[in-house]
Length: 290
Length: 250
Image (cartoon, rainbow over all chains, first blue to last red; front, side, top):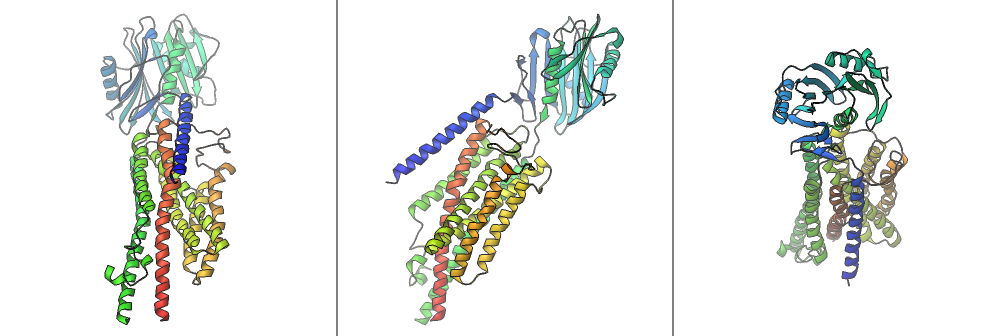
């Protein structure tokens, strides 16, 4: 007699659970795919080959001979960490950077380093200290046709909504070219935002203002796939974040749950025990009276 | 003890009146279910990439509120039926509902505070949802204090029945306040709210697999099982009290 309602209830609960799981899986399709490791997270770049391992994210665009990689190197020495990362991952021996700067972003102070090896290989690196070591996000381009450099610079005038001053500094300090040699082209809209473009016979440059900083991309010759590379690096930098280690708070939360339950169940046992004692006393008194 | 208590009414002796089979089954299922839902929340659901491990406390925090909702709801049912029929059994259910509901709401409040420390960078803030949850806890704590302060059993039961029914307003306010008051930072998980006008419920399947069984367990089995044990104990305490009075009058 009890079986029918029980079976109906179980069936209803199963149906509810199934609906929840199906609707959750529908929701998952709309979410940005993320590479997740124990230490950090970066968005997976659509259209790029995913070569990520357990502790590092690495995406390669074969036709541009470009690779974007993120990893945490267990040392507090930023230059040493960048050297180890470029050496281990790309077999590049690090020398003196052709550009070195610092920029304050929402999650900390990042070192900006550009390396030019003269043999068609360039490395653009962002690195900062974290609890587990040094975060190194590198863009390495090995296309013999053109060298590429991607970097972030603090705005010289943050009232401006134009990256031109930073583009001028970058082209002059990295490529030794004056911005007056380049012509301003039509701006282009990418998923990361509106980019200002300069082109010339010797090189191309792009820039975008984000907050109080300018994202700058430089390339020898015609722009080619510079926009796609700049957009991908930009999305990696903006999407990168470290998962906080707060497991001790979870342990505290679980301890509190068990303490409250212990108090509740313990009070039931304690009252049961008192009840038995009082019963025994009453029985004893009744026996003595008798 | 068996020898000493055998002259007493049989319904006071635990040995002569063991828990019914259904209650024993419910107790075992509840303990296993609690262990199972803990395992789902700690092992099966993935780590939240933004909040880290502390997000897992959500699989206890949210269900514990709904467990309190069931318990306080039983207090309303117990109060209404007691006022209609004057049956002491329903008053015991109302009392047990408050005790269990208060424990569950304390778990809800404390786990929320522990979650807030790494996520909001504070243990406590006077957010509308947090304030209403604190008022709810204090209202039911006052129920227990007031109940202990009224000597006349008839008056106590009638007064506390009315109190238990009215106190449920604090539960409803706590439940709905994040959908009414826009100045809240408390997350709204399911459906529309002033902060999340479009509504919906977007979660990975791992979250759903951990959350739904936990929600069902805390909403049904956990409060009902503990309340049943508490009601049985209260019945025996009341009988013992009567026996004491009887012995004193003789």
